[in-house]
Image 1 (tube, rainbow, N blue to C red):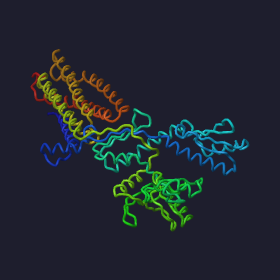
Image 2: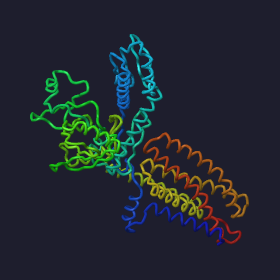
Image 3: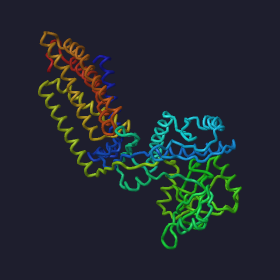
Length: 535
């Protein structure tokens, strides 16, 4: 055997061993069950094979726009007050359908230029337009509005991913859903408590620390009566977490302005309060701690309210200046405290979400899919192997070895990359077998043609691979391009099909051309000159 052939055989064996490791790793046992368990550890199964939950979420992007426009309203008011400009009203006429539109009424005509200056300086992302009856409309620039909505979706995906990752869900799929605007696709394989996961994903977890101005009240009417029927302009009524002695909600009068918010959080952990009950402790960033210290130092003796998702969790008296740590008390269970700390760590959702679709795949259905898919793959592979042996005789062994090596490389790739194998992915594996056979048929038929033309076996093999190469590359490139289009525009299982098909085709180029040629060269090196080739 010449040296050139030796290093090629060594390379093939090395690649085989590497990808075998990708398939089974280092198994704990060499029995059939041990090898199967090792393979299941290396190759992750998708939702349709393992079972789990499939969700499509709609991000309420107008919530994020409303938050931005509410801040814009306050900035306009601050600017007008700073310049001592009177106005009748500043409001949002239709926050549900046009959350970015702000209507300003009653600004004196001589102050119009000042108003333009305020908007251009403080609200560069907004446009200002005059209207009838001395009114002005402030609206967000179209490109800025689109960017804000897209950022809300991207931030929601990142926040949901952070929360799901902390739950320990294996190989979740969390991505923008291409079939609907501002939608998110969530697939959670192996989830055994979908209700809890949904609650954690949907919670906005917006933490605010505000001043408590009164309460608790047994009802909203009692709170209004305590204030003479009119709430202060800088206050709002919010429900409490607990219930009163009559079983109804408790209400608190809370300042509109927040001392610090969830954006100032550095971390949050499950803990216990002074009575030993479950609670959530949090720490603030440096800037948040400075603002919190200034606020608590100026309100010693006043009440402080911890507000979570517009619900008062706890109210306490400020006894001294507090800088960067606090605790959220309430009637938490152990699991609620743990989940709440986790949600706070992952950040607040920028907007609410609504569930558009929910499907649950049971593990038994996934097991049936695995059995059916594997059965189809095995039957198809065996049928192909037998056909190649019968039709191409000795050369059929060559094709069968190349096909088996192709499957090992493909499964090893799935093990190394951590890609998720889905039912369409199994279809991609089966299709790869067919493409591999197609490549061998092209090569073998070309070799037969060269032999019929009177060429010697070595010359026929060389010419067969040379002339079939262009056709093989052409068919593979066109199929890979189609698979890439599926990957770019498809979602979930469709992308899994595209991944397995693409890598299977690349592996097939190696096995059908390189490996098969090396086997032919090895066979020819052992034959006598002029001896016939079995094909």
